[in-house]
Length: 335
Image (cartoon, rainbow, N blue to C red; front, side, top):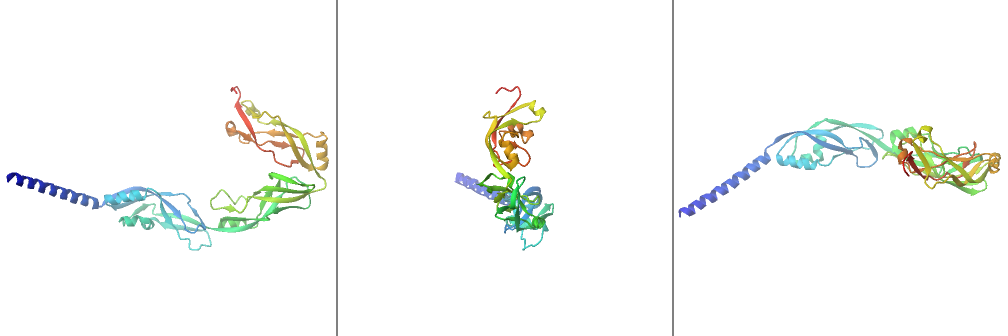
């Protein structure tokens, strides 16, 4: 009998201990504690994709608040990734800088759902610039370089390009043109004086930065139809000598050679004034090609370079030479 009473007392003690522990844990989990200087990343976005926002990257702020230990754990899980603040642009027609009050805005991002009701943020506000995106048709102007053309010059297809950019950039672009650089055309072909150049690159005004995620152009290249003047002719030079042209101090430290050991370019077609082309065809005027390093700071990493045709004034290659493999070695270095 005494042994049974002892067991009952032990069981009662265990139950009371477990209940007390649970009560303590519950109380501990619900006691509010002050949490200071928690780093949070905030990303500003807008839902329509019709505006450029600045800043574009997440910004870092510090928050302080009161919360239970359980809420603190939830907070840390929630803020492991940037908190997204979505802005309503409200059909802006001008560039606007908006001040965002961060404490109430961050609570609306989901922190209030954790039971956090008060939040101190440093900084307390953040300025966000919204720039409406707009489009404009830019005429395409053809830069013929040193080519001599018949009356009418050259015509680009398409004749205009659609450019999309922030409103302030569009205002700068009004009245300006995109320039088709005929001298940089990838190919040129045709019969007689009638010529066609494809993939002619467009050069845009400096105000338009097409590397920006907020700027785009409907095309980066155009086709150009043009008619050569009567005094323009072409000839093909079977072998154009190739030289390596480098500053003397660089030549003293490095050797640069075509990987295939070529010392000339073959079958280079040239276009220019008829009298000059005739003298080139007769061997009276020299034409050469030069291979140089465009970025000397990265000479040891250089593996490809494009030769440049050096010809009399007014004479240009019909097709820009392709980049060729090159081998760069320090002098004294074993091959």
